[in-house]
Image 1 (spheres, rainbow, N blue to C red):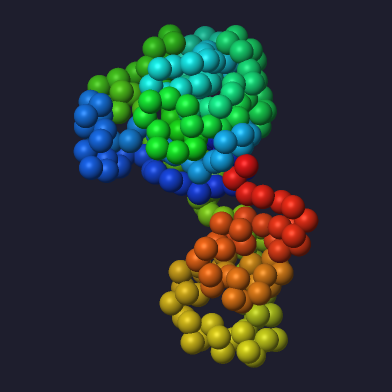
Image 2: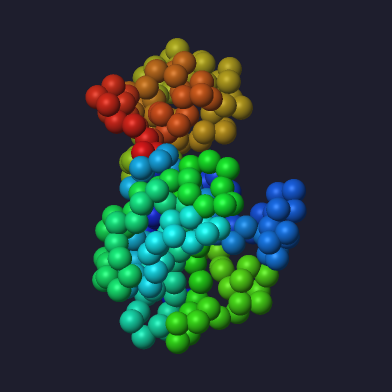
Length: 236
């Protein structure tokens, strides 16, 4: 399969990757593991089409709740993406959609869910039918290989061009001796966050204590300080 997919939600944290099988849950469903990627998303969070195509299904599915499926071509050859556990579908079967178009709102509908999130799945199809259905995941394949590079990093990571990463570290370490000392004393934290940490401090406007607080990561990782203070909220 030769394609590139956009991301289905704006802010990215993976709750559960493809292929895992915690406490044998998926074996009970006849699967080798999780047949998609679960993205963190609060109820009402916009969900976007990851590619151009036609809506092959939109509505309720007993186990997956409300969902939207989109096929890449009208011929039924290519691939299909699946979006489950929505609170609302914003498109209808047969509708043409474009990549980046809002197609639904995230939710917590369906049988197999433990909290609000988006289950995103990908399957290759031929004449409208899933191929390799017996691959252990009922034909599903790992979508992560079709997303952009470093797709699972925070907004703080992506906010600035990579060549500026070194300039950011220079500014942080050598123009702020106190912060340089703090980072040396807490090297393990710096190594964990890498340039996310630096970007939040240098370009995001966050203070050191906020950034080293694990409870603040969902905030500073996806918003600048002034954005947050002006009302921006992530994952919704």
